Image 1 (cartoon, rainbow, N blue to C red):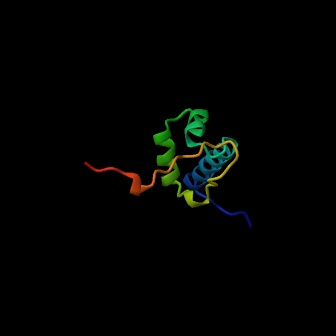
Image 2 (cartoon, rainbow, N blue to C red):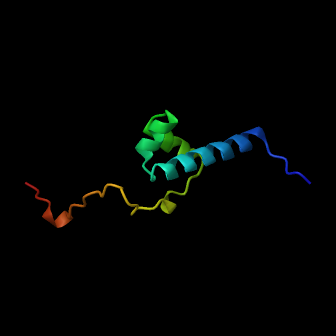
Image 3 (cartoon, one colour):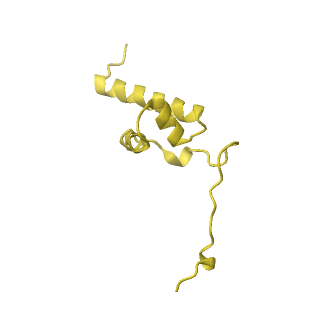
Length: 79
C-alpha cells in the first residue's frame, strides 16, 4: 500500500535533502553552500532551523576546514 504524503511534506523532504547534499559537498561550510544554492547565508540558516536540522551532527574537524582561534578568557584585559 502506497504511503500518502502531503505536497508540503514532500517539498520539505526535498528541500532538506538538497540542503544536506549541498552542505556535504561543501564540507559543511554554510557560506559556500548558501552561495551554491544562490541564497543568503541567513536564509540558509533560517531554512535549516525551519526544517529541524540537527546541527550537533555537523562534523567539526573536517580536513580543509579553517580552524577558529579560541582566546582564553584569563588573557582578557579589562581596564
